[in-house]
Amino acid sequence: MDQAVSREKESQAIHMLRKGLATGFPIMLGYLPIALTYGVLARQTGLSLVELTMMSGLVYAGASQFMAVNMIAVSASAMEIIIATFVLNFRHFVMSLSFMNRLRNVERKWKLPLSLGLTDESFAVSAFHPKEANQKNGAYFYLGIFVMAYFSWVSGSLLGGVLGDVIPANLSQSMGIALYAMFIGLLVPSVKKNLRVGLIAVIAMLINFACVEIGMSSGWAIVVGTILGGAAGIFLLKEEVE
Image 1 (tube, rainbow, N blue to C red):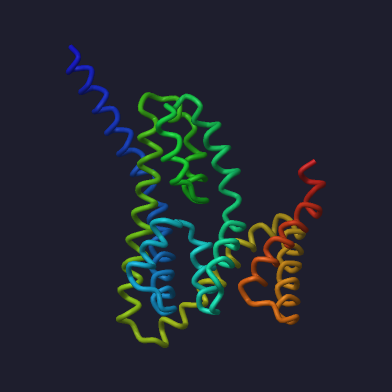
Image 2 (image 1 turned 30 degrees about the vertical axis):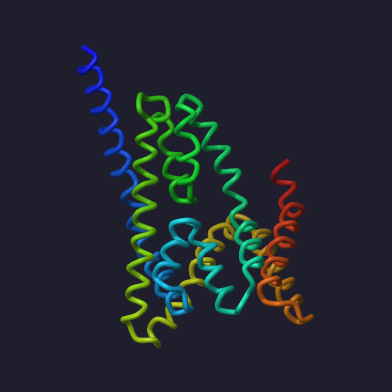
């Protein structure tokens, strides 16, 4: 009897895991080209295959990794990169709180590992499937989404690093435009909804420019511009929050 119950639980867990993997497949399709670009740029910046792959495995944040590679290229210090990455990724605290609120019925042992797998894309996809959190073995569903996203990002980064040693230097250098294209792609939809978001971006840009002009290093200029630009957003978007 106990063996039958155990097999049933295992079968249901596998079913939920497969369902999660299938749900996360579109994320993989979106991650692979961006991860390839990151890998190529990181390799051309001077990072080894181990270093760029470990960055994807441990940092696991596309925008921050692109920014870090750019900061490495301008010889920013480790502290500058760490602070800038922390500020850019601060939104993950909010996403984790929202996600954990949705997983109230999931066992506590699952909450920490699942929160580590959150990205903008996996959070958005999981938000469309709130019912699974209340189902038996529902944690396996979210695990499937996050495993698919994580594996595609890390493996895509590694493959990009390998290609960075193969493709011509001129071609790989031209891929640097992907960094700016990605941030513009993230910014434009928000600006269309609210012009104040564009104003915040302009303020951050001007602060960054002013810091560089007064002799501040590029790394600290990015950090200061990000923090003060975000602070400006608190006041400019205050009315909407209220």
